[in-house]
Image (cartoon, rainbow, N blue to C red; front, side):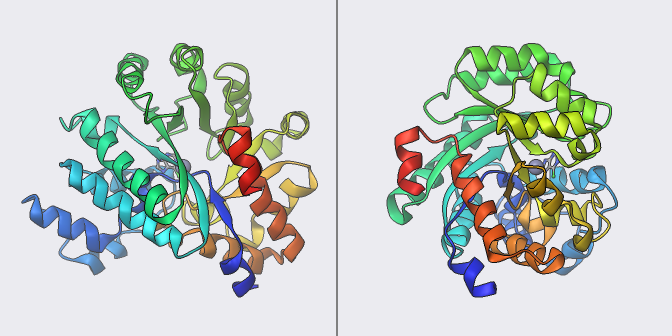
Length: 324
Ligand code: ES4
Ligand code: ZN
């Protein structure tokens, strides 16, 4: 199974680039920018990666991205991710970035987007990895800040294909950002949102009905509502599932309890993704393999999950056909 997964072509659809920040690179960039990290060394930092819920992780994730200041920092971060997935036979990736995590620290929007995008272009030209770049709104901030951030994103339509919603889910329902997402869709952005990771099925309904999402990120808790599950299946709406993330953030008690088989049996278009691999302990191959072993997936199941990924990209149909 391990060799099978390693050799299998894969598409990644749920990946926060700031969540690929490996401690070694974080310390290197901190040092060259003259920034003190509140951890003695790489080992002390990795020891802090012990989370009971989403917020525990987010606190340390925002602290980590604080050392990113220059365009080259964003390039180096993204290039490290691209070379990693190249070694794992990932052929296509659609990645998120959190502009407000940078602009709130007075790093200009364009510094972040230009550095990330330049590395993605190099990945396409040198390694043949196709990509999409999606900006995410931090849902713990207010709707005005989100709208202002979206407006900045519109200045980079040559680099950004869509809008997502991430950060602290509980207490920040999708409806808080309806106007922002309606505006984004009207401007031609594709739409995704984290929903049903920690939040209730109601948040998934809102993502569908109010934000008009094209994919649901996570979506685990949709399974609590049979009518909602049926609707997502009927619409052929993809779920970007993140097994090791679910484990590390205690969305599931252990991987053997992961509902991936229930999702497939319910006819849901589930895909496998790594979310924040530097923090959650593994990239695409580790997510596939550990999940497959934990719930005893067949090779046919694994192929279905990988094919769902390619079928659910935001590539134009002609380009999508090439990968399929
Ligand atoms: C995230 Cl796993 C997850 N959930 C919500 N927001 C996020 N930002 C980065 N990773
Ligand atoms: Zn995520």
